[in-house]
Amino acid sequence: MASRCAISIIIPVFNEAEILATLLGKVQALELPQAEIIVVDDGSADDTAAVARAAGARVVRLPFNLGAGVAAQTGYKLAVREGYACVAQLDADGQHEPADLPALMALIERGEADVAIGSRFLGATTTYRPGALRRTGMALFGLLAWMLTGVRFSDVTSGFRAFGRDVVRFVATEWYPTDYADADVLITLRRAGFRLREVPVRMYPRGGGRSMHAGLRPVYYVFKMLLSEALAPVRREPAEQKRGLT
Image (cartoon, rainbow, N blue to C red; front, side, top):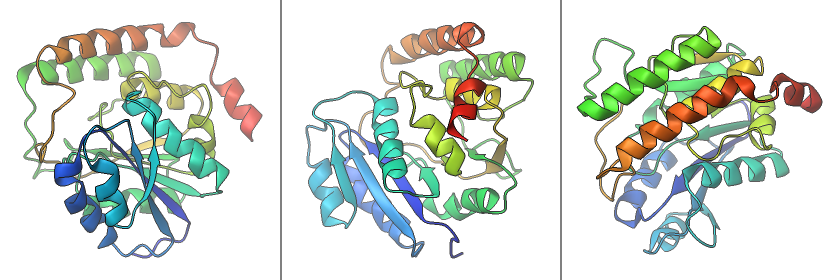
């Protein structure tokens, strides 16, 4: 499917040299003529940047590891600066299926949503099975997101997303929660009045590298995410920022 808008495809990466070339090849095979692939290297210690350049992607390197949220927002700010009408984001670890990207973009281009979220749990053929702790965390995040927004998300932690122009401008501001930008960003976008829709997508186990959820990290992740979501109601109303952008 040929896209009708100029797209920035943002891929935040950290030490993913082992599998990045395969992912980039799949994205390039989509043949989106108006799309630019931007790899934001979050201070990798391996050959991630070199692999991305060799594959033909544009590379932005951060001086040291600042976290996935900062890396993603770096891409958003670049997209705003260069006038991209749409942004898509996917992970570099092989979990996301690039062939599902056009389905997310189509929702944005048809004007049916401002944010398209790829859900691994929609559709009758899903085979994704998270671990027990991660599954519990997802359920808690989803419950809190529903309590704060009135919207039930089936996959509140999905990093496979597409944004329209106004959303890109919004997430390039200080309103983007860069610490753990999963459920928190969906809550913020919903409170700002944007329309969010989920799309069934395929997701797979990691293709390599080290997950941010390895070891005791899931415990910290769950704690920080719940705290961040709980504080969402006491922040200044994000709709004020949205009105300032329109």
